[in-house]
Length: 509
Image (cartoon, rainbow, N blue to C red):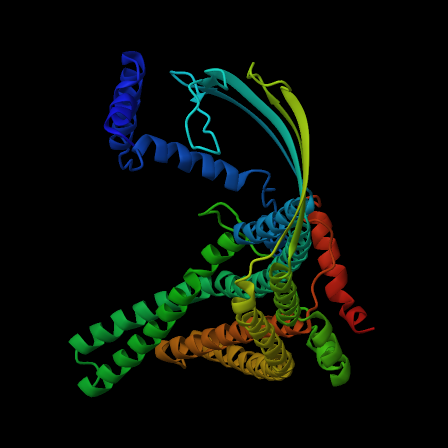
């Protein structure tokens, strides 16, 4: 570029254009400097908190009577916030699958534009024989003109990659469904375990408080007797220590039971602080039905329905599809283009026209990188297959361990139930003897504490049975066959849950 041309380039702009460019640059720089960190404002945070609280409680049926285990499970399935999040993740994955199917469509792009310059577009001609420039100058374009077009593009590579991506996204949606199933099994396990802990709290808290009160009265009497030297000091100290030890055990029981109600409230999405009365009901024994099934049927059911194993199968399919995607990228691409164009330039003889083209392209570097890309994709398939085989063994092992755990938990519950029955009878006898002034308060407190501990262990053993049942059911891949919980009422879900747990053998037919 000559000195004259440089001068013309820098000074050819009119003052109006130079002012416009300068103002635009200043505005852009000032916009960048105005971006600031914006912490949450107390008012905005309070409004968001209020809105979230209303959304959490929206459409939640109130608890109107004693809560049964089936109703607690139904409320957890319908209202638990974590489960809602998993369901939304599955729904989002399905929507992404629907969107990915449109990637196979060709591209149809509409464009419009406007171009302007401050001087004419002038061109010169050079003589090809002697290299001299023609003295004539030619204006070949208007200073201001508009452009428009409609372009259709179809690519074989885009079609292939779009179909492959849609298949992968479909498998990811199925993986999300398996994750939702696992979350549902864990939710039911937590609900059943916490329900019986809350039942223990409901049945034992009054007994614990009453026994602690008796122990405190006995401790006062012992300290008074010590002060009056009615007993030897060492006997008095031993008496007091045993009372204090019993009180410590009772207070530990009270502390352990205190959180059960809150945990149950969180699982079923009930108002925090609401006192939930649990229905006194007999424990449903489904262990016998589960343990009576043949091992071969259990293994077949596990391999067909286990959520972790099914997820591993889908991940293996995704990895195989990735190999096909990689191979498609390495092949030559064929693209077809067609478009309708328009240009308002008055120097054009034909201001609107159509154009079409066929293009074949191939990235030559694929000859070098292709084998490496294929090996990486095939390595992903090998890894997915290995994980699936490992999960195959893990699922069978998990099922056998869950079955063994259920058998042991049931045996421990039966033993804890028998011990509790004996301790209750002992406590009643000691209480009657104390009424007849033949037993001390220490004996009453000690035996009442032992009976309370036995009853607590019975409830704990029952909760372990419930948890073991649910783990066994989850390892088999069995789940309640109910409809859309968002469309069903709590009463309808309770009925369906009750029928299916009553007829659990139907899953093994």
